[in-house]
Image 1 (cartoon, rainbow, N blue to C red):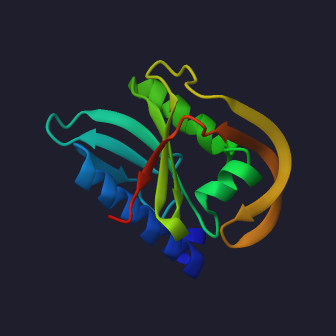
Image 2 (tube, rainbow, N blue to C red):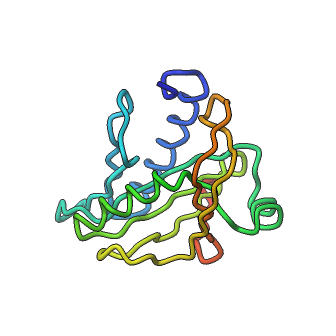
Length: 162
């Protein structure tokens, strides 16, 4: 599994930085899925007080990418494998909660958060689908698959440097 590699462990450490920041700044617990086996989602948000599920999370860490470069070179579009996004939205819909996308720009410690879908599964953001060749995993390789290009123009921007 990719999570067991050096790059995978770095990404997991960075995802956990996001989780700690979320828990420190909001009334949520960020409950990650098991990382030693494949999971359709990255995490579940649970209310700290009422212990209800509040959302399903897809989290990605990106390296060597500033917010400015993301806006200009990538037109504010976050590339994620469509099957990951689709599965997360379906799971959120089945639980009656929203699905959120967390994009962490590690080098400048900037977190973009975007509600991807409403509790009824209705999309909350523009997603463009395209079959493209991309890096297969965090460790490299190539894959041709359907990818989601998620418009993050309305995402909330959080500075994790504090």
